[in-house]
Length: 198
Image 1: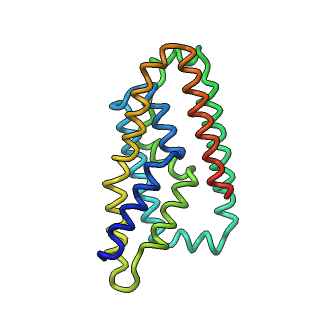
Image 2: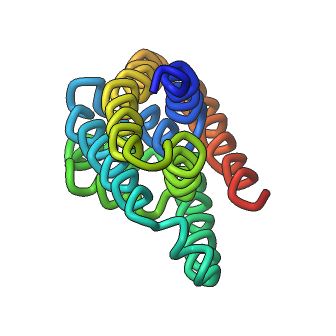
């Protein structure tokens, strides 16, 4: 077990703190609503990721190997979702921003559900369970170690992006600054599609 402890921590950190759909969404939502109002979304992301880890441990990767069309369909849906999200972020107009007080941050359930449209989560969870689990009577213990690492590290990693978005909020009042921020975040979200295609 000690042989996988540090590698699992490093893998978890690299997969949860790097740019991706969750982190871009939290940055934008943080800029709109502040950090505290995004806690339900953060909890939903963590719970959705945990459920995916459990499914992967139960053989989701094998299902994708047996029926690759399922994975291809999920990639297409995920790509379309990311492009929609990127467009929405980049071209959110002033009128919709003026109605910000009528909008609400995403809920725990919505955060969980979005994990099933996020291709990066499938790659992350299947890789974690394929590469880092141990065989035989150590399998369950290694699964618990992996899920435990994600349970601790994920909220810390994604909170960085929500806090960063909250920090950007001070420039969102200026239309020119807000437009530049939206274009940059939209571009980064669209660029994350590359990771799905490769």
